[in-house]
Amino acid sequence: MRRCPVCGAAMENIDYEGFRLRHCHACGGHLIPAARLKAIQQRDAIPRGELQEEVRARFTASTAEPVRCPRCRITMRKQDVRLPVVRVQTDVCAPCGLVWLDGGELALLQLAHEATDTFADRRALQQRAMELETSPERKARFMEDLARLPDAPSPLGDALSTAENTLLLDVIIDAVRLLLRRR
Ligand SMILES: [Zn+2]
Ligand SMILES: [Zn+2]
Image (cartoon, rainbow, N blue to C red; front, side, top):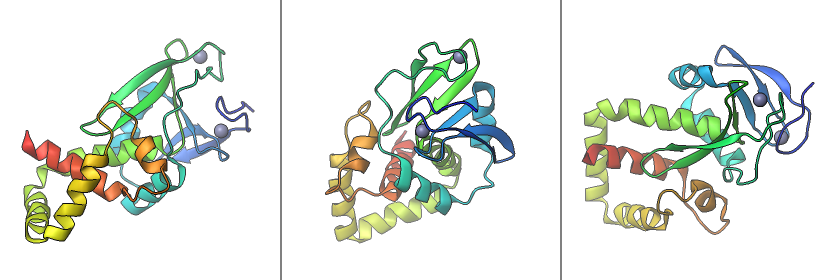
């Protein structure tokens, strides 16, 4: 059994959205065939609430340390996945075709993908925007949270892992949606 490239715990094979991948229960990381990542993101068998819960529980910040491929041991290449206000840094081994995602990153990518998909739902977005307009309190809080977001490409993890920061994933997802809408 291969060891987790970040924390060294034994990884297990799991079934995730119908795909077989390796998971570290200790740190929450996933090792995924690169070619499968998009397909996994496009499935939505896992309820949104569960994905949010996983992000809250597991996501801290993308590992800045070099990560060695659990299969061939070479240092994986850092690759940014840029979203409007969120950056996830993945680790890629091109020869093995593998991607390492730190704890919570897979769930975050799935949520971000979902946010992009629901961009088509303009009515819901307009409703949300109206709610913000008609509730000065909520809008003020939203703007405060938004201002507190690190400028891309700072990792979202800093914001989420700071104890006194009340930033919630919902706010970020809202921000992503609003930013997408503005384009
Ligand atoms: Zn681990
Ligand atoms: Zn490799």
